[in-house]
Length: 168
Image (cartoon, rainbow, N blue to C red):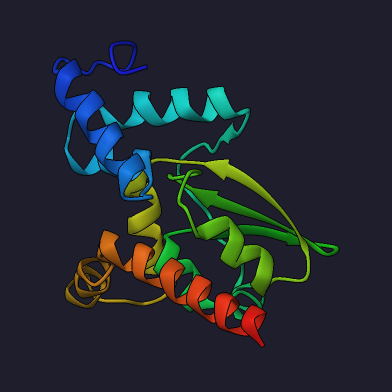
């Protein structure tokens, strides 16, 4: 996939994927954050590989009433956008369908059926800023606070709690 998406340094591409797998992190985020590919063609190919619709630009989010039904913390933490909500079904945009906790958190938070589509990281992040009224500085602080190691510690905490409950 690396060469097909324009990655010129296939060794670094492969190393990033291995590193992400070893740390239970998203390979998509690992590749994008390393600037190893041209983002839009890479994400379009990921969408195609996973059978997800590529969302046309510009992104139009829900009306304020619909947004009130979707937890802003979920949208910001996992960088997902609710774009449709009709009759017990959500359509959410992501740029990272392989995030280790996003789909799980969405499923445990929402009672409705969820469908996923993809768009570019830049468009999703810009729309999140505009939609939730977050200033650029605050948003950057939120993103900086999303340390990849946090994923492991959250998973470890969950497993630890389950192990303690099982022992009783």
